[in-house]
Image (tube, rainbow, N blue to C red):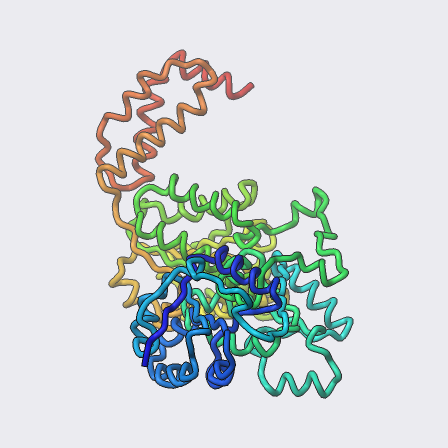
Length: 522
């Protein structure tokens, strides 16, 4: 039996070009489907796309034989195409079928079509929404107008039967594929499986979160060819109708989940630049906070929790302050010192005493500070000193993202970052913090003292930052600059700050210091 060539395309642009050429002739490309592809190949002049099939078979080798069987009727007039990056794997899996390859545009096109007698098919547009708030408005509008909307995982025979039962047409149904596209990033074999469902639901309106729409086009290029705003199909204004006035904006809690892509990048860059040392932690944080931002927007994760270990003065609290400054520099940081929460009634101090008991009218320290602060970050200091009821409280809070204080006020902290700090080392953490709570934490890291290079970088940063505040007053800075080269015998950043401040003040003593004080008092 003679073997055939595989034809390759290098990218989505090339695939779209080829697809459009066929489409203009009233022809199309077929995705591979078990059983159906075998029947299709009984006719001549077919084009079959197998990129996602190969990705699927790499993870499911038991299905290779059934896939081979589907190519029994392949002949020289048929063309099988694949994305170039998976060519080697395809040639290995389908060695009995294919023996070589050729770029798709080196194929000499004979007169007449590659596919005969095929009904023209148009790929759909993907409709995008910006964030969870827009999605909520979309759902409200569709529900009000009794238009079905489902996520991809809800597509099954039972759903299709209900559509028929209630007289809905496919074109009236909206499908959100956001969670599907996210899953495809780590499980590429899902692309092939999803094609099987999408090929049966071509008339549905498909929506996706805007910042992953391009990935959806790449993964599902057989079905979608463009991106459109959701307002093209839903007559609903999705602009922010509640544009806050100055007074209302002052009452708004700003959370990391409120940041757009640019704001999140600025936060990560600021932490990278101003948190000295701890590079491994910073790399993990940047990846984790971006993942959390997305998962929160699709209602998959309520809170982001970090537990920082290590001796005092290594930057644990400074890290929390850096996030706070990027979110809302005018707001106060919610800080709870659990060194004061070691008594048996510590939980009452945190969220208020039961009604009728002393302290029940106050609502607890956490609730009171949440009401006053306008930034979505909570710092829990010396957390290893907390009691078991406190541990159990946070166990539930990290899961639910909401709690009720003694005044029956419900506090929803969806989108918040909670940072726990402790002077324990890693061994002490695993010994003293309950395992159940450990498993709820997103990021655990032990801060280490700065290296000599990192300490020197910090000293230069501190001095330059100080000079930046006084240079406008035309003070001579050479002597202050000389401080950078004087060694500091401490690993504690607070001690380093104090030592450097003392040295700078010594350089500015006398008339210079008095003049500087007068300038800043004016």
